[in-house]
Length: 304
Ligand code: SAH
Image (cartoon, rainbow, N blue to C red):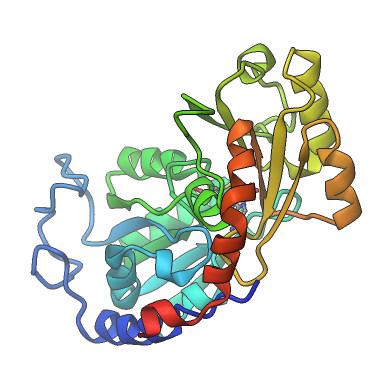
């Protein structure tokens, strides 16, 4: 799906972010600033002049960056970024900033989590304004919590900037509402990939009716996940979707009943990054898809 409508906005924001490195309070970004911002860690005894911004870059479409993320990207001195952060997003980063790729696909880590933690502390202690850029939201399966804890333990100033989590982005761009009064009264976000490499989930809870289950990092275990849900009582006819590269020009949506989804996804060659959405809300896409897809293909909206 071609989604080109962000181009003009991207250019204008880029100019603002690079030439006006202002915080929302109006003060200029300076490494030696007192941590007066209410969203900044203001614990006593903080070491050094540096600061780490743990920033959510959203699911892919640069239009989904927050203004705060764009501003901080323009003012960063060093950026440490993950594989989910696309080149389109990185175009917002101050061109003079040092770039460090931290990686982190399931089997391929450029730096271990411990190395990333220590790198952030070392950079901040050198007085740097560090942008730790993550896909989606830093506190949703993004290890932002672990990094923030490490920074706090080492007395490093930090601030967390939320991003649009991929479940929200995928839901909007695929025409699948996460909740709907006719279909779903709860939404559950789970990871299909635990720290120890297993998928040990609370299957009876996930198999309950009238809720939406969104599974991050689950596409390589799709058959196991769908099989367990049905074995624990989920109606086999429950509609389900896999949304690959949501909100990017390469977004693909595959839908099927939960029992046939693994087969259909395999036939389509679906690969990570992708989200699995299971629940009656997936039916709503039938009514919304044609309009949503037409809007996605249209360059008109923001360019007007
Ligand atoms: N912090 C991120 C999640 C990181 S975990 C967030 O809030 O979205 C990585 C997983 O997120 C991927 O395996 C995939 O399941 C999901 N994901 C991230 N970006 C995605 C995208 N553009 N499309 C589909 N799934 C995505």
